Image (cartoon, rainbow, N blue to C red; front, side, top):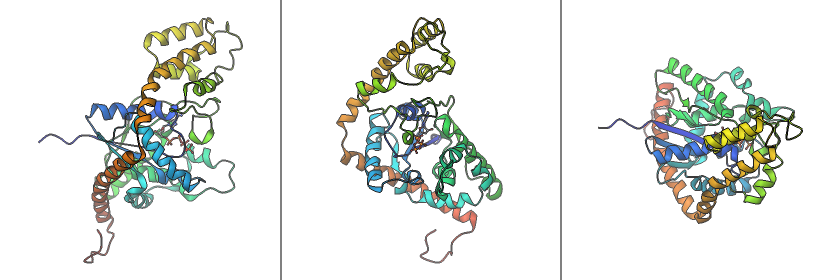
Length: 334
Ligand code: AQP
């Protein structure tokens, strides 16, 4: 009998349009893994995370369908992986509660995402504070060993690893310590002030048309010290160059670097080349996206949820047993 495949889990909030940061930071890696087929891939639309901040229910519903189609178009093929919606598998919420019993409030209060999203607000939800616990539950429910996320989520993943250590010490070895993939990246927003993020309006969407993407990209923040073309640029601090390292060939990267540091190309020139590279990768995704239907994608999400639920129930059964929960009464659910 062959050894079971390593399990991979990752998620995305259906809280806005899929953007270049999501794609370069996470979704492209998901596609590579799905295509390779050497691991057991689980990808989840984390709608319960999306309700931790103010939102419109009707809009969220619509966004779940749209995000699912966007992911499929990006190569997260539900025929080759388990693609599902988090709240369709309610065990995520149940495990989050159990994990919260071993997660210190001090650890949660140190999370930078919590600090950023709560800063200056009169009132924030408890759920926003406990967001990383639900993320730990998402991963541990499937005993995932690998979690491909962008750089912004590494701190939450480290908290999950700490939770695993605490849990396994207290209740016996149950969960693997999940690892990120090497080389996690952070794409900054077009304003250069914060990471590219759905809620900040500083994004280029993956399925935006060519002209609109270019009009945003050409105005994107670059090296503020570079006032004229002949000023030597600093690619190492420039978000445009970061994207070149992910999208352009080695030859083009070398050309961009040399012309930028040598004051031969202005930021506009580097952006033009980047835009061409982006178009090269995005045109086939747009074509695929146009072929997809809501009905078919919903069917795939239903199948994905059934498969995920089977595994989730088994984990919850084990967890309840070690925690000493439940009545053991006949007819009571274990
Ligand atoms: N800027 C980024 N650079 C690299 N990776 C990124 N990711 C997100 N932004 C970047 C990665 O994408 C996956 C899904 O993340 P998400 O659903 O949390 O997306 P978001 O746009 O970042 O949303 P926010 O900002 O957390 O929340 P809202 O919806 O309020 O805007 C993850 O793997 C993430 O690392």
